[in-house]
Image 1 (cartoon, helix red, strand yellow):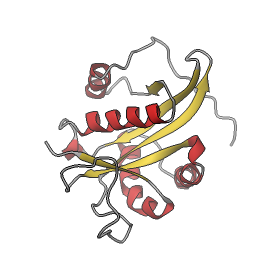
Image 2 (cartoon, helix red, strand yellow):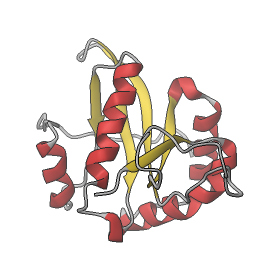
Image 3 (cartoon, rainbow, N blue to C red):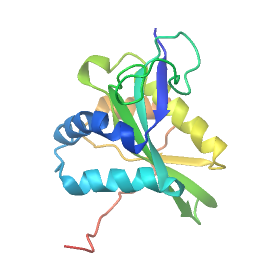
Length: 170
């Protein structure tokens, strides 16, 4: 199987990311609106809050941590990205320090079930370890048993609690 290449997004990468984000939001039945794009821009500009990582196929055969600077395309990437994931950082007393939330992970339908998600989650865990984070959490919809099975196989545990949301603005 081919290996994935992960590149931390910059402002220059975001236009190439919008179609994947729009596809993710449609798949999850979420509203993709300018506020989402504004939040992505803010996250890229404030790396202490987390990061967005672009996913592409590693055409070079090794070095899965990022795409090389040689022969970049118009968005600064040597290979067009086709997926992405978002890590955001937080703090929890329960988990005794800094935590990370895998806020979004998108792979297009033709890339699912081929090991790309496993590679992305492994890379996300590596980033967390480098950041001194010992707990990685994620949210998965109950109607997505394939994703749930992947996450459980990779060691994620269901704490039998639900995330609840209260909107404070608007």
